[in-house]
Amino acid sequence: MRCALTLLLLCAAACGDDGSTSEWIGTEGDGGPSAGDGDGDGNGDGDGDGDAAGDGDGDSGDDAGASVGDGDGDGDATGPMFDADGCPTGKGPDMVRIADHCVDSTEVTQAQYLAFLDSGPDLYGQPESCQFYGSFRPSNAGGCADVFDPAQLGDHPVTCVNWCSGQAFCAWAGKRLCGATGGGTNEGARDDAAQSQWYDACSMGGATAWVYGDARVAGTCNDNSPSDGTTAVGSLPGCEGGHAGLFDMNDNVAEWTDECPLGVDPADDNCAARGGAHDNNSKACDHEQSEKRGYRGNDVGFRCCGEAQ
Image (tube, rainbow, N blue to C red):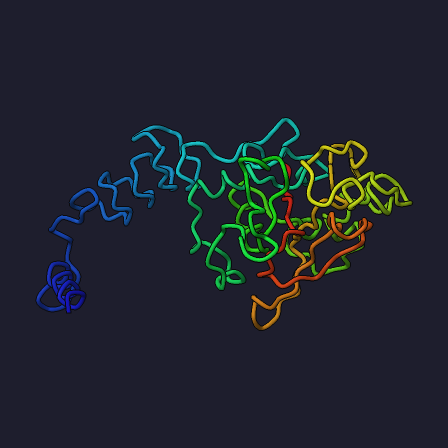
């Protein structure tokens, strides 16, 4: 009833007796007469953002009238930042540039994931494939009990998060889950460096089977030889590669990638988690385990990729 009454009042104010449109003569709530810009900030600048910075993003960190518009809507006045190599920086691990894209140097850590949680991520901003999911917090059930402990394990990879949590973190950081070379979901061969960003990074463009060479060397990476759980990211210097500056792409934890054939129910989509984990005796770069998009286990984490500027 209230909505219907509001519509009648609006029509009465905006239309003549004969139904023809007339000039608005009332207060619009955003700047007064003839300032109908739709943004509701009261200044009539027509930028659509709800603040006075004229930048279109609505960030609460913007100063009224200042030219600080970054367009990202993340609540601060700074847009995405890039390092000297043109890779996204500032959130999550540092990145390594490979041709025209960038790859996180390590798996995302528990401390980095806690920063994401503390930012208050919006569940309603998820893509359609993740609308089934109701929390970004790591699971604390079953084998995930007490696994998420950033105070004690802040430099260990975050686990017990599903594919949707991984993609949400990457988006927050100005990145995305590793997918097709050139961007988007990899719907091609996952063991082809020309098609899969993750495989390209791990295998140095298809040149090696493991990050360190063509033959497995037990204990070089965290493959259940040096420990029975995760290790701090980047703590095993022999587990660097395929490309220089990348660590733990074999073992430690398997890594969610944007390699998910779409089905009828997104919750049932099988997504690739690449590289093996600490509990399965080392897997080569072409190894993948197929898990439901909603799977949360202590053997799967993620790293992000991004486009170079």
